[in-house]
Image 1 (tube, rainbow, N blue to C red):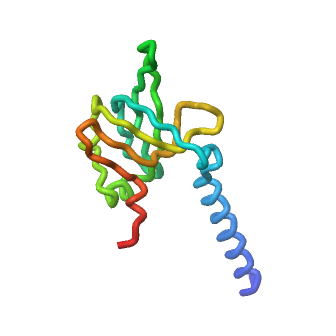
Image 2 (image 1 turned 120 degrees about the vertical axis):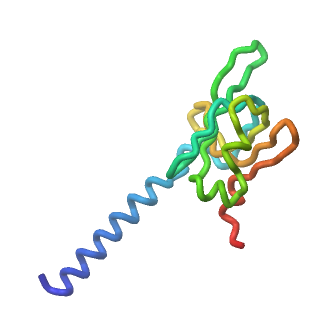
Image 3 (image 1 turned 30 degrees about the horizontal axis):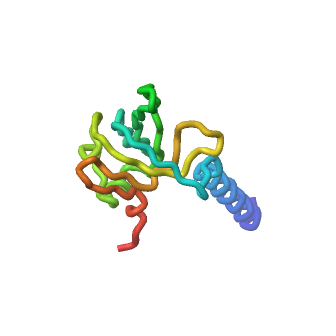
Length: 130
């Protein structure tokens, strides 16, 4: 195979891999122009790659519980933001805000959260250049 053909093949593979990565990181399912804020208790903190999830049980006025999922980045980004699993153990009361799903599903991109004791969490702070 000629060098030119090899270069074209490599560029094609890089382009395909890049497109796949961009598709994976799409936030198209979330409405970034809106926010939703709920109060509840942490059900589970799934600290996983590539995205973590904070599951929050929320009671409506009738007392019915529904679980909301708040998506965040992976463990290293959350660690840079100062967020640890021990900060948000099951049963922790909090108020959490996010950009909701467009289809009305009880899920959102996690924007901010404040525990009942006043400690605030901003998962996007992990992207800050220091």
